[in-house]
Length: 162
Ligand code: FEO
Picture 1 (tube, rainbow, N blue to C red):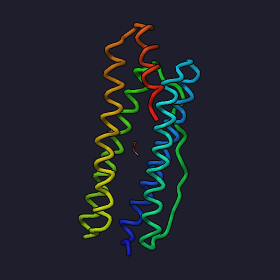
Picture 2 (picture 1 turned 120 degrees about the horizontal axis):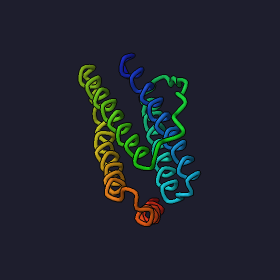
Picture 3 (picture 1 turned 60 degrees about the vertical axis):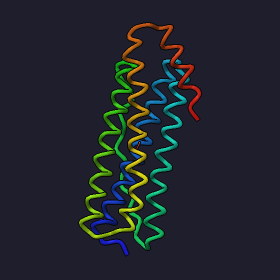
Picture 4 (picture 1 turned 120 degrees about the vertical axis):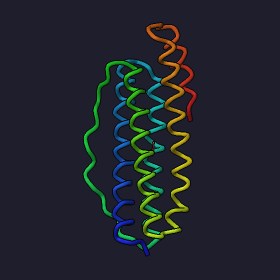
């Protein structure tokens, strides 16, 4: 059985992951408007991953016999100043999610919930990858500056993400 505190925190995380999905879908739309379809692809893949994260927590709550609570999803920002500005927002958002996962781990520890603690280790590792992926694209965008040709090359590279 999940404690009420643990169950509530996990349900709130479903909302965080669904908001992440909405944010990246909005960003995919922003890049599509710029005709940068590789970046659009990268963010669309990321959007799907976030839905997967929400489903993982949903299924975990169900498997533990908990109650699902779904909350209103905040409307995401839909426009950014530049591709670099957008990827800064991706990295900052992933840092926020990492902090949320850390909070969940702390709750699992304080509630002495070993199963949830173990399940959360997947998310702890996933966040390392999430931040690294965003940092990699951001670092390249910083290097590129205003060079349109290089931006097109990075667009081709981001198109490969599956
Ligand atoms: Fe579900 Fe990108 O963290």
